[in-house]
Length: 489
Image (tube, rainbow, N blue to C red; front, side, top):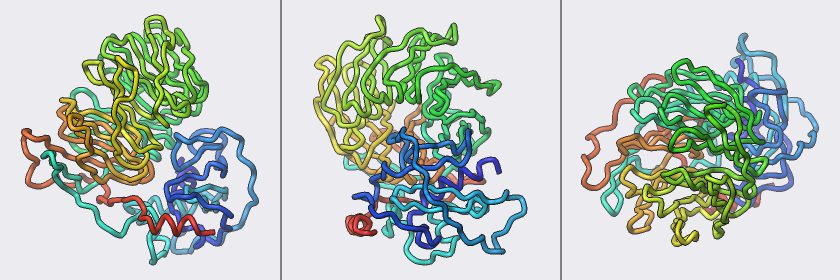
């Protein structure tokens, strides 16, 4: 039960109403909306290192991490778990204070949580009911069903597969190899990388990284996976034949990772030190450090590798880097919280998710200015383009869905339901399947799409693979639910 304490911490944050049932004290204030985090409340570390070493991190979304030392809170004794849930293999409980996204501070017994996690339950909602709560489900769950398939106004057909692929705790990025054989998922709190065999739709291997895995990119030859490690300021080269990882020290709290087109350099965004590290693959060392804006989250490169665009998450801007001289040469404004960037193949347009604005913004790279924007959903994170660059797909963390933008008409043409808090997203090489990591349900949703003029979707979705979870659709809370949550003590 290596991750028992960590899992106790995580699942507690997702069971939004469990505090009252556990007899926990209520805080005096709540966030204004059901997806708004409570940044002033700390998360208490339950272990000195490794999984669960999350001091000061807002567990609702690590993109809003707090770096202050958390203040101690008064401990409270919980009643022991019922005899029916006793399990000899689970270690003695260690009680700690955790903070949920609903601003309810309460304590959980990791022994009880670990046992619940060992059961074949499908989601946080199932965990909620397993604890005996027969009433209303957690507020993030909508009582209204969402369609599992549909067709956009411009003819794009889509279907959500009826299963989810379980991975690690807090899955972040997902990268698919060029052959479409394997997908690699970075698990932030599990400190691991899940390797999904796309033929069987099952996790074939889990690689222990020993650091909070965030983003990843492939080497030019596809034989290495480069992974950023948030906790230990590490950048890791993971050999995909031996699955041995080698660490290279970079800046503080590294996140975004991109490989140069010629495969000689890796660019790493250092979230905590406002820099980009340039790693020389030949020497396995940092060759240069480029100062950028506040809290750099992602870097995208032009096709020739001469220019880099850095999303300054709290700097409300995009840094334009000349990578030949390794220097910032311009700053693009007009974005509230730039989170992820992709650049068109002709290097004319960059597409940026603006998280707090809930929009996808298009930047004319010649003019270095935002030229159009479209609302895609709540708190969009990752964006990817279809292989023909006709569509942009966004993982909308706050509305639990994927937005589909027709780039020619500049319109949102579809909203496809996903799991709980989508974070990472990538398309299969043929553009026919979208794989989405779900931060709070610890799994991957698979969506099949067929563009107009392409072969139609199969008459029925593929069968659920062994070990998968049944699909459960999550929607944003209704206006009434948000109003009730805002007024609650």
